[in-house]
Image (tube, rainbow, N blue to C red; front, side, top):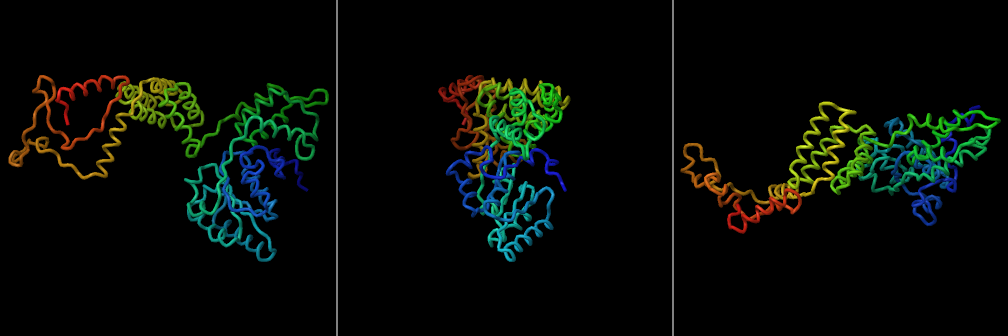
Length: 432
C-alpha cells in the first residue's frame, strides 16, 4: 500500500477544511464573498487568479468538498481535447446516473487556446459541471470573454511572511501529516524567517524548503537540529524570485521601473531593474525601454538623456550580461535624476491624433517642391529662405492652420526653448 508520508510535505499539508486554510482573508474572512460561496454548498463558476503557492487548487478542492461534489482536475499544460471530452462524459455520468454534481477544475487555464476554452461553455450553461479555473495570468487578457462572463474572478494575494511562518509551524506540529511524528526538530526562529522570506509568498515553496532543511538536519542527542549553515545550503539555489517573461508579473515590474524613473526615484528604479535582470529579462528589452523613457519622460528637458540611453543600448547589444548591467544601471540612474518633461511626447501624440482623425491638410504652395520644370507654373513659389535673414528665421505659414502641439515646460533645457519661443511670439515673428 502506498505510504501517504512518501508524498511531498506540501501535498500532505494541503488544507482539508476551510478552517485550516491560511491567508486570503480578504476573500475568506467572515462575510467575505468567496467564504459565503464555499459554505453555501451551491458554488458558482469561478476563476482563481494569483501567484503560485497561494492556494488556488486547494480552494477548488474545498469548494467541491463543501458542495458534496465530484472533483475532476485537468491541467491545461498536460491535457487536450481528448481529456476535456472524457471529463465532460464523466460529469454527465455523475449527474445522470448518480445524481451528483461535478466541479471541473482546470489548472493553468490560460494555456488552453480559444477553441479549447470554448468547449466548456455549453456544459457550464446546461449545468453539466461547475467550472473553476486557476491562472497566474490576468484572466482579462488570457481567458475568453465568453468564459470569463460566466465565471466570477477572485484575486489571490501572495502570502505574508507571518502566513508562511504559520504554515511551517503547522507542518512542524502536525503528527498525522506533518513532521511531528519524527524525531524532535529544532529550528531556530531566525532560520524560520529566512525560509519564509526566501519562499516569496509561496506556501508550497516554504514547505519544500522546510522539508529539505529537515533532511539536512544534524542529529544531536536525539534531536534533529537545523543549523544556519544547512538553511543557507537549502536556499543557495532555491531563491529565484517570481518572474514570468510573458506574464502579469513582467508587465507589473516594467511598469514599476518606468514609473520610478518618471517619478525621479533612482533607488526604486535600480531595484526594479535588478528584479527583472535577476528574473532573466532580456537586457536589450530593458535598454529599449530606457530609450523610450529618455524621449517620453525627459525629452528636451535634457537632450543628453537620449544620447545616454542610445549609448546604453549599443553597449548592452555589444557586450551583453553580466557587464551590461552596470551600463543599464548608470542609464537608469541618469534618467531618474534628469529633469522631466513629456512635452515632446504630448506633441507627437497630439499630431498623430490629428493626422488620423482630422481632415488632410494640403501642403502650402510656397513649401512645395520647386526644383522641377513646371513647378512655378503650378504656383510652387514664394518660399522665404530662413538663412537669408539676419535673425535666422522668417515669418511665413508652415502648416496652414493655427495649431500648437509642442509646448515646452520651464524645466531643464526646455526653459531656454520656451524663452526663445516666447521671444519670437512677442516680436511677432513666431512661425505658424
